[in-house]
Amino acid sequence: MRNFPTSEGDTARPDPRTLPGTLLAKFTTDPAANTIGVRLTEAAEPGEVAFVQSVQGWQRDRRGRAGLASLGILLDVAAGSGIYLLRPENEYVVSHISVSMVPWAVIGDEVTASSSPLAVDDHTGTGLATARMESGGALIASARCRSAQTVRPNLPEDMLTGFRTDPAAFDAGQPLTTHLGLARVDDGSAPDRFRIRWQVPEWALNSLGTAQGGSILSAAAAVTDIIGDTLLGDGSDDYALTDLGIELGKLVYWNADPSLPMPVRADRDRLKVLGGLLAFAGAMAYAELAALRAELEALKNPIPVDAKADADVLPDGYEGMTDVELKDAIEAKVGARPRGNPNRGTLITMLEEANAQ
Image (tube, one colour):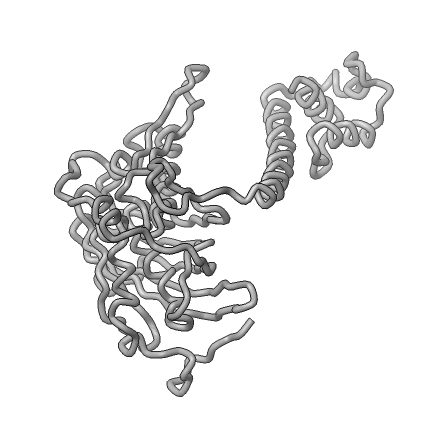
């Protein structure tokens, strides 16, 4: 990893004003950035690159505010462009971004996002950058971004032109979730069980023909709002999304049109590895959820004082198993060992739930 100092004499980190105008301007011409109204602006600090966005009515959330979902594309553009100050000759896409937001913006605000590169690793073809967003001179968000080098060419300009959308076509009476193509799909089994379907619209693509990283960030933020409404009830203002991180190990590709050049094919070997890691993480999460459910059930139904003496000899079919053997059996079923020191009744409940799966 090569680190770059910030001194004025560091020739490896050029002033953005010395770079070709088309290099940074291209970030405003992909369908997502162009539609959302992202513009290149002069950075406040040397060695930074900055973009600005005027928050429009159709970019609001259902509470009428401009939160992370409204500003994800701007943040991605700024954070992803920082690495170009170190390697202007390469092509990069954002592979990871994490952001912390303080307040939210409001409709009509002009928000500026600035980015500064931290380091670049030519061996892995990745780089790190930081970004911040400000409105009215006040900081509203900070982020850290990793970009990965790509060799995939941009789509033809005439195709990108067709993807760009006039913001006037959006209904300002509808929240951003609608314009992003997000829809809640109830499965009918229970009021709190549903799926979120995302039909990526053409305007949310980047110049490579894939879902723009900021569109994915905005969609993820919007989904959390939908979940918050479900948990707390529509119209609740008792929550706010302040922190979010996403990995774009494999971008969401838009291959609906067979005429697109160079359709993307998934790396199956890598997907197997990632799938295995995801399955392991899911098993761990399930084990923790089972433990929490058992503990909650125990709190709801405490053992009477006169029955506690017989708690270890309940007629449950597990009388011959020690607590250690119960934990071993749970681990064999779900792939993760119970954490902490749950009592015997909790362990039995966890094992019964695992056996019922």
